[in-house]
Length: 479
Image (cartoon, rainbow, N blue to C red; front, side):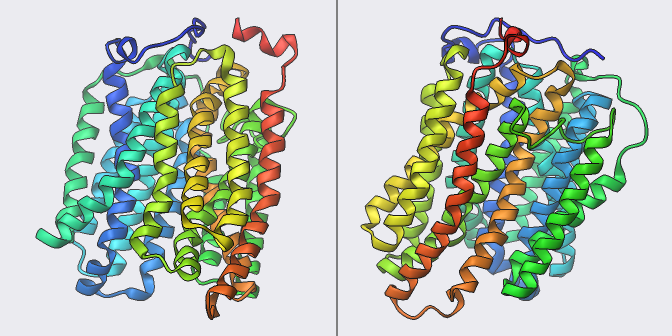
């Protein structure tokens, strides 16, 4: 089997001017818009939810508005690589954008929360597919020397969405209606779908993959994420442990069945094995996603309870992570490929140090120190993220590139889902639901961030496996 041809002229500094004036600028704009839709939509909906509940009710179902989106995103992301291998990028990506737009349109006209949830599931399928296929596009369309710049641009748009998303949602709630907010994104999604459909197809990313589509395996993956997410919505130690345990079992069965498949595999070979660069990369992403989700899930609540800061201040502390990620990604993205190993090692080490830092700073303060570690957490990811895809695909077989590219954001979302349920179990087991006073909140914070350390260390081990020097037979592709 032959995969897409790759440009191995990847060494040397690449300026932003060279990149943005190249023939790949339209493809970059398309990829960034796809990422914007997925990233900003979630934040806008979070801002609009109080108004939505006030209008149509369904407060008990609010948790599912997030979970269904995430579940659908993971499943769509897992299917995206195989879809692009069968049909190229144009048709699946255009369909994903249209599906996202349809979900937004359905939510915009919804008479009840139940219908909104159906719309959110469609938005998750479309958004998850768009992001995974955007990574596939970066991995197979752009020459490797441009990969880091492309991912830095993606990181920038993700950071922009962190600021503009809530502002846009607040604007529609304050001056119009939340229904127009969904309509605003529907308009963008349908426009993106049409733009993609009218562009020439990237035939080079299509490979000869035949046979039935693995719907049973996708259903099993959906069940796995559904069980884990259910455990994280209403956290009760016994109930949540059973749900998460059942979800992990389903995930293990999915991985075993997918590993036995040949042409229709959804994930790369040995996706979490330390023996391969691909496995080490995905294990590192999964572990660190689990280890860092506590900042988003519990950081604002704990910072407010312990240090008495406002919700706005706590929110800006979390936003420091996005700021750090964006700045670091932009600053280092022109680095040549010979520095990939050093960049990944430095970035992931910073992430692990930040997790240890949270263990001290969140319970003890001062508040500015929490913000510093949040910025370090984001900067570490920004430093490493732009080179993880480039190094992993450079060491992989040609016919694995699309699977790897689609798996990276999918595994990240899966890690967030697993991590949210995991830290939720830990938090409730040590009394988070009945906090009384700052001293008790500080003790609970210590337990939560201590529980993140094993996954941080596992991520560090996986990082060393990824950046170690490869045997000559594996590294010849680097040229």
